[in-house]
Amino acid sequence: MGLRELKRERTRRLIADKAFELFTDHGFGRTTVEQIAAAAEVGPSTLYRYFPTKETLVLEFVEDCLMGAVAWFREQPEGELPDALQAVIERVLAELERNPDRVRAVFELAEQTPSVSAHLSELIWSFRNKLADELVRRLTGLDPQCAEFTAALSAGTVMNIIETVVRMWVDDPAGTEPLELACQAMSLLRGGGIPMPSVGSGDNAPYGP
Amino acid sequence: MGLRELKRERTRRLIADKAFELFTDHGFGRTTVEQIAAAAEVGPSTLYRYFPTKETLVLEFVEDCLMGAVAWFREQPEGELPDALQAVIERVLAELERNPDRVRAVFELAEQTPSVSAHLSELIWSFRNKLADELVRRLTGLDPQCAEFTAALSAGTVMNIIETVVRMWVDDPAGTEPLELACQAMSLLRGGGIPMPSVGSGDNAPYGP
DNA sequence: TCGAATATGGAAGTGACTACCATATGACTG
DNA sequence: CAGTCATATGGTAGTCACTTCCATATTCGA
Image 1 (spheres, protein in one colour):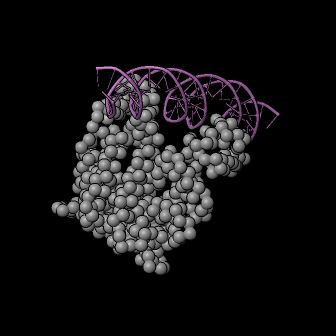
Image 2 (cartoon, each protein chain N blue to C red; image 1 turned 90 degrees about the vertical axis):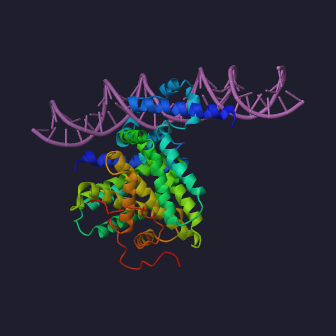
Image 3 (cartoon, rainbow over the protein chains, first blue to last red; image 1 turned 45 degrees about the vertical axis):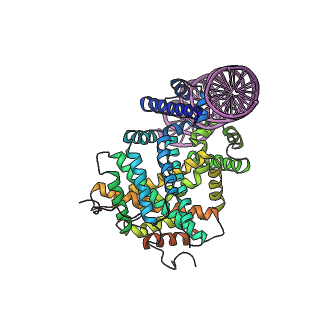
């Protein structure tokens, strides 16, 4: 790796860190990109070359965790899907737990700022989509549409668990550990421990021919 | 109801309709709020009194469907939760199906414009939250934290089904009907027809004491 | 019909983000 | 090592979403 990429990574980190510092100190809305650029000692136009929007500066860490988990999943050998999905959940939670303060700060900023909240929601949705794409690749033996449907629901369930667990953890950091919470969530979902919509009255034949 | 509220509703509709027209014709990014205001024959400042952001102009219809369903659910007598949840799903889908073109247009705009996509994701998330709030109110007999956990997962499952079904419907309007798709989704989720993360290795005692 | 409450339009300003260009810096070739 | 090529940077000018504030107009209750 050349000196170029090294400096790139360095300035990228610098900008993101300075931005986060200013956000947590003075709030998202009360911090301008010019202030961030000045703090990182770069020009505003340089900042925009690294980060397309102000919001991405907040969410970079969470994005890395989620997308990293998807990338990791893609490289895993194809085994039993349930176990693989559990591994994805564990990986995301473990990654987030490595920086609890940062995670909590992100969710706090999201609560205060609608646009940050919106981008966070979309980030999580994007994670669900990428996971679903990988799942549909692995779901062989089903017709394409059925595979897509199954993969989407499956990825959605994973997302549901992660999102619920993380939000509860953020709200109550001293409560049950995320990993333990996730296990309980899986148990509940598997064992019918949670109220689930009942199937329709009439013909609910299994999907596909 | 006075004349005042009548005119309010009328201008609100007018603005939203004109905006949607311009968005679908020229794209979200190529339409300025001044153009919308001019088309609706109001001042820009008036427009912002009705809609806080440009994105809400796109999502108004979907928001009405989702929030309307939650409001309806709140007023329903408390009965069996699974049936009630199914009713919520059916209601949302039925409401969306009343205006298929509009729904498709919204999702198309969301695909083209990141900020619209982000706000759509947050809207759906907000729906999940409100649903969870109502569920936790109905889940008596469990300790508070357990109820919150269960409600969140349950609402997330409902959201998962709706979102998956609607997206598939939007992608392929000629395919299986949304309601039928939803029934199949419920069957799959209930019957273990989809790959679900497996429970952890060790102690997965049921949540709560 | 008069006064109070509220809705409207316009003007001025802030700040995110874009497009563009001149310059500087790291990377490869002789 | 010198040259030159690709790329990274900083600055400028501009667009547009959104806010704040005030003067005016419209509706409502008495």
